[in-house]
Length: 394
Image (cartoon, rainbow, N blue to C red; front, side):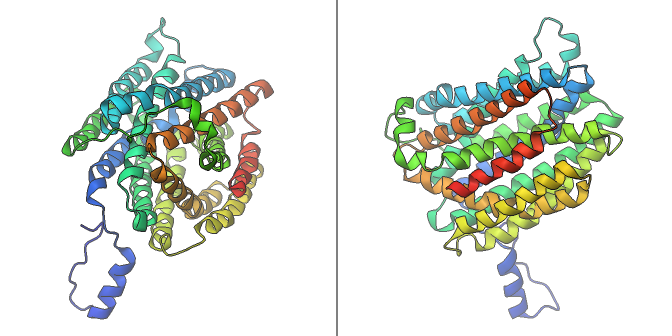
């Protein structure tokens, strides 16, 4: 099966036709079809509201410090659940069932967010606890499944499909979500998220599950594995840069007042993800042919240091997000291919995924603590620029 089928077209010479579709077709691994479908639906659902959660809390009257506490709690819970709860449940139930188990927590999170103004007895950071557990269950399951069943020879291309689909879904979400908030309100937005999350579960029932590997999971051994420790800088960099981009950067844009309302911010992020689809497509076609794919990552790292400095020092939002979108996957597809290669070599793929998630989210929590102590988020883009340099240490 192909992402884009090689269709006959009158008026196109056979040679041209073959060359054209050679560039735009990816063969889809049958074992990954259902998790590609689940990823797309879940990403679209959560991207409807995801980048707007800090803004939503701010509009409800929560201070910047309280929002940072929310993010701190979220990352601590996500990291801790990835170290303990998620790997144990994966071994007992299987990784696809782990993804299914995340859904009740997502539903509770959406309900809590929708009715937060009326839930005077419910602490706002309780949402962070629910989100942390839900995302840990989902991502430990998803990444373990992908590492297990992706094809070593085509892992770069398969990783690019993963990024193309997630970028496409993420591109629609902020655009639609921003307009829904402006014209219909947050409750309708959360109802849409709830609906698409329900649909996202369906593909997981289409094939058998696996439980992570033959070897028993032991957290005490994770940080003693030399091959794992080599990747600490990648996971730290992903954690710090990722949380600033998806959580704090939208809030910074909102506070700057560059767009008038959240629909403008949604458009900006849509541009980033749409351009990112093009970048993922281009990189994906050559990811399995380039021997020094980590060298490609290091080139794009230098570009992203400049992007974060431009974000911090200028208001050239459309320019910076276009550049970020175009080069985003030149950075992340090589990183993800490397990480999936490392995980697939482990006797228990869940072990490496747990290591990655723990390092990722505790690093992000540390940044939130620093910003909380500093008393603001103005320094966040500069921290992201510095954190990009961690990718050079692999």
